[in-house]
Length: 270
Image (tube, rainbow, N blue to C red; front, side, top):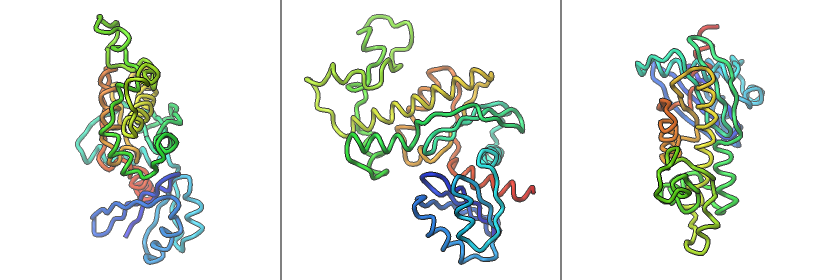
């Protein structure tokens, strides 16, 4: 049995391979001791670790695990997933939207970190909590789909009020910029507020990603990360905004496990 683990800031992602079959698991990072206890049940397993809490997890388990750099492991996992999908892209930017967002440029078999942003799942959950008092992730993502961003965000179309716009009217001119215009007309629901938070996170991630893609001459942006898990609105925002800016988005199913899968691949190559 082989077990790959990406021990991140918010979630611990696990890929377990037994009899050539993969099982995906995830735990909250606060449950790292629980993960260690689970690993103790498989003392003979080959274990590969990556992520910010990898060294701490190693101190809790009996196996002498292989460890890899998170960026290298994530890239290796993305390569594996793309190959299995039959998706051939040699030159692209990938954005890993976890607690924060890390952005990388890929050219063939090499990758370099191109930048990042603090906007990500941590901002999504933290700011939503400050605005609504809701901290449950599934409730946040479910409510977000019911929200109306147009009464909170100022779009280009709002400024021009039906006149021809010099840029696409659906582009956001100012996140949260429509609040004071509508404060006497609308009641802002929790769903509206959360949808607007997802809007600023998604648009920030996309903007930084496509700037990197433009700089490196790449037309594809590959998006992965736990922030897209059961989060249709964030995915739609990112996809539509990428297309609106004339780039090609690609989402990898189970992409949040790229690091866990990739560290196993690097272990096999070592």
